[in-house]
Length: 399
Image (tube, rainbow, N blue to C red; front, side):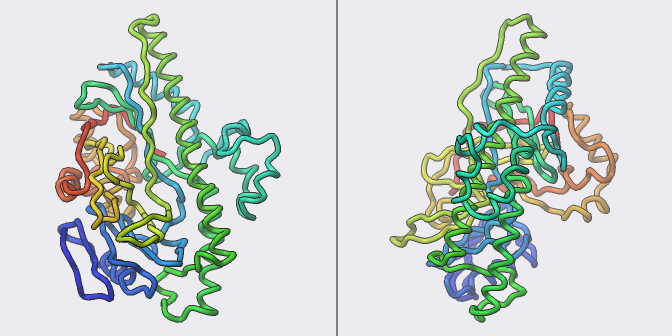
């Protein structure tokens, strides 16, 4: 951990070389009048909107929509199976079925999903009016987003663990519902800050609400719903992938040896929560960072060509009990398409025998070369997490 003490409060950095844009954003955070104690920057950090991805910030009495981001509740889930091996042909069958039953990219479900799958069971969605105007407005649409992967860096991956078991991992968020909530409240915060808060320049993209204000309470309520929706979304996809595994293994092996599953591990990495740190109740904003309290089980993915990890938190107070949420981007999307060699990226994945998602040059934004070295990221946060299982990718679906 490196310490930067040039701003109003210190910046603690678990990163060897921080890009200029992300560092400038971290300095803005450290100069906010309501920022508490210090800013923590995780080893996967890179520039985002307003707050760097991989940033952790505590605030007193204030909440910042842009410090949570547009994909509220985005996170990871993983399930360990009883399988110890799986052949390429079976993997291809499973991938084909997943693509058939789980919409990816901008695609949605052809039909609304059962209301009981939403975060709170109800026979009448009007009960959700209390969750705020955006949820009420977008609820019917969200029923077609439930159980869908999305695009960008979201993925479904089948992996082989260092524990000799096959694992299933999913990365996804709150889809358009979360974006609608984020955009709505960020616009309100910008308008409110223009009228009353002159201490935070608009160009910092860090407009905020007092926690106890009406807008602050409404945002918190709708943000929490989006976190729950993102979990429901991941769970539904995982349930369907597990069913596909069961049906495929039964077909291939005639019911023997069959497959069972451990309980699902889930962890989010875009949210704000009220926590106690250094004796104070503060709002912790994690934007591309995950909870790593002592003994918390977490997930840190690499890229579709590198290892991912199941980890256990060490509860380091200096990171506000947080760790990285992945490897972190080394190249922005357009830069990756320009600079990476398509043939080299594909050959490297093919050589490892990975069923990957790099089909055209436009897919290079999610190639392994677009991401930081996951080994370096994990080395830089040895004081934040303990590695429990290393996971090698076998097959990947990208949005």
